[in-house]
Image 1 (tube, rainbow over the protein chains, first blue to last red):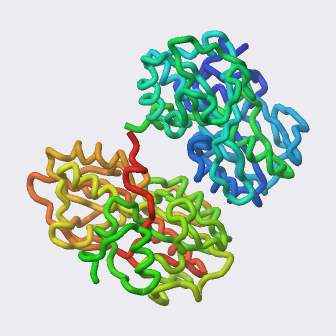
Image 2 (cartoon, one colour):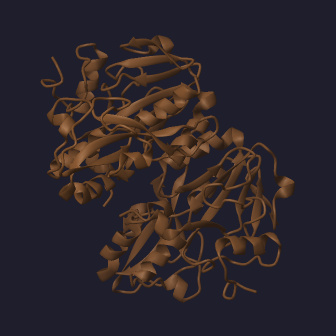
Image 3 (cartoon, rainbow over the protein chains, first blue to last red):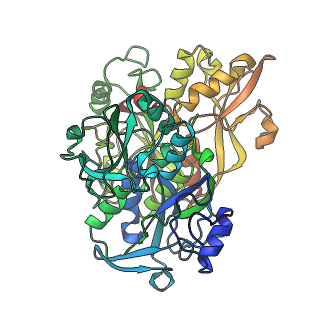
Length: 264
Length: 264
């Protein structure tokens, strides 16, 4: 089975993952349902990280925070287990990637707090539904991501620059792209910048810091959205003794529908 | 000086308060600027309370959280001092109101975390601007507030029923009232219920649990919004050793404009 053939409700997909029958990239899986970035941190950092997310809702849109030691996302995925139901996990110790694992039961302890953060899959679906094509999807690439000179609002030990994703949008569709994504504040919301990459500290738009380069055509503007890479980058800056994340592309699939998070 | 005659920018009004020249009800003061409910709690409760607000954004719309021991709302009112710049404070010890004071310097210690929460003044201004009259303002009364059977989502030690405010709205303006208030999620946002008070556990609409009764005319529906009394009531339920709030009606005035918090 791969991402193209796997089907089912979020609960069924999580069951396939938990029983080790499938562990693929989750893009397009359980369509219409909200997928989440995962960041798991020791309790001593949890208040500062929660505050960082509260102060920076565009890069860090919180879907759910699971209380210390608890493993069930009772609000967004009742019955699920955060230790086993993402398709892959990364273990960072003192800011260094030390392992990539299928489940995190052996790293788990009662002092860990799990943060589920919105991802751009939800608003990309809305853009495509609105007739706005996304080149990185058409070419099968990862979206271009850049470290900017836009400072996040610090909280406690957490601070750092905002990371953005960039999508080239036809000039005649830029207004519509703003409108469509504004409806999804829980998944990064409206763009943070339109046009001139230099204005936000990006020197070379053809050389992303993360992801793949993408062509910008003459009738297009680069449009920039706050990116879920920001909270992970900011947290790792602080070199926490332990931080667990999902493996990029292998998101945690919640039971919530994209539509549940749309405003107006 | 009273609320009718005081004028000035938020900074000027806070300076009058700080220098003890004025301490009135803040309704209508520094019009167009966001006023905040205040809840100050010991650090040991701060993570749970922050999480409670994150899980219950309609009754608990966070404007800013000031880090432990800090007194400046650096995001919403740079230069202000949370200990002196609200027009009045209430001191609760072990869940009991023990004092009402002008400033809280003598209660302050480095372990306190200050939460600023949106208040309904912002969306009431927007409703009046949209041509939707508010009877409690016309009659000079406090809004009617009720304890409902709508449960909040618990977080740690915090749980309890949602408190709502009720405003009678002409049936032909109910849709507009939903639209207008939906634009202000940072100040309670869209209604939580329209019509039948019984459906949300209110037995007698003429007997509010807080505030004043208000007439509902034949061509009106009662419309209910999540109320900022909820977080205070929920926090006091837990009988924290110390909790400090503003005095009702004497809000903390921020530098932010209502328009800054409008979505779409």
